[in-house]
Image (cartoon, rainbow, N blue to C red):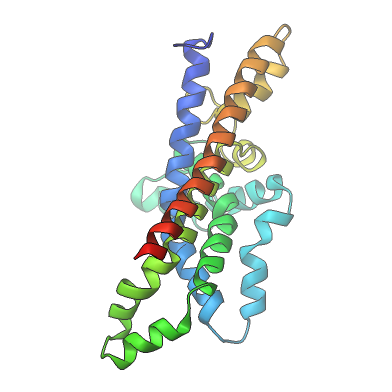
Length: 232
């Protein structure tokens, strides 16, 4: 079924799914590490780190995109050596769109993982320690399984949010059909063209359906994992 979408419109849908997947893969492990640091760590500057992590949730996405452009642009302090030494260019590319989306969705994963970790009973970890389990063993056999619903929920929620990211992507990666034009950008382009209302409506419907499915999947998987762990 093509749902009445043209090849170019389907390309935007596929690109959105690709970018959202890449963004989760890029941010998941760092987000777990930061969440553990914020939940269990006690160090000077912890409140500042917490604020910086959640900054993308409160500043305009365009500001995040501009910051990435300054850092990872071809003349930026990170982007210039990446391009000169390794031939890696992020600005105005699909990889750049994934990076911008990852930065915007990073706090969502951190928040979900942190809540999952704070729900872990420290007594279970203490019991494992008294039985001779080392720190790594306790994490792999006790902490990680118990916090896995939060990890899963955070990843799926970030994926759903990544499908709708607009401001940071268009600022850092631009709106290039077939390269960086994700679903939200394709909707924006359609609204700027005479007679593009029908195209925008079709794409908006697809976007709405994907977002709802993503959120429902996050809720279902989190509940399923909690039930499985409860039975275990």
